[in-house]
Image 1: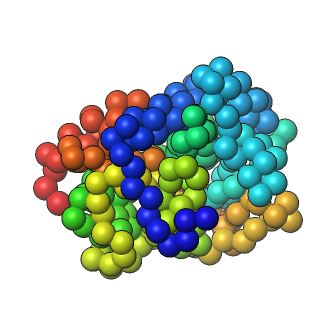
Image 2: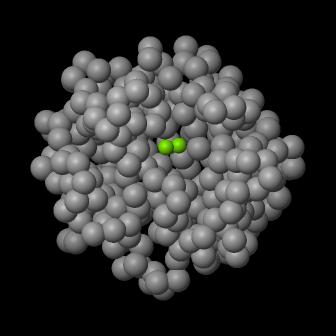
Length: 271
Ligand code: MG
Ligand code: MG
């Protein structure tokens, strides 16, 4: 174990992490395209494992503390760590898919939330706000800043949205350092004041992953000892990317374009 130490990567090591990140990013695009009514999360899980292994990588969730699948599939009021079920997806469902892979010893970790038609305005907005908050957090991941700048940016983005006070920002699960292990120092909460925690520096790799609900931020674990659902039954969304700090800024290792398009949009937006 590395204890409280933050693992800094060389540029060569980040190139290897990029390869792992692309496996995860590509797998999530395959899954996104496969989400439709009638498909079961178990079928998506099998597709994920096949896609990861075809690329020479290994699913990192499978067997992690005994987790029984390649993806976490969290439907509707499930927020994270859902075990892929055999219940077919229905029109109007909301599914969060979290996926991790290891390639040549390096980890990638990312998540998307996909809404099935018909999508209500409320759900569309939940998905937009959650994804937007992740990108706000990614944009706040800058050399010279502090880890808590990221969570502060996530929270500030959410609260600044129309009706932003209504959202629950989950506090029980954090983003995290990542590298030769999936979960490493430091923790990356999705809330809080800026200017605290480890200094953001070149070679750091962080998974940034807000979870947002349409109601309570309080979660409870189901009897399967994995699935975390909202206590009030409100639906939730979860987005995640693995990022790295380079001399050229933040590199989104699990985004197919490295985050270029979204980050260019953000840099043009006054904050
Ligand atoms: Mg994840
Ligand atoms: Mg993660």
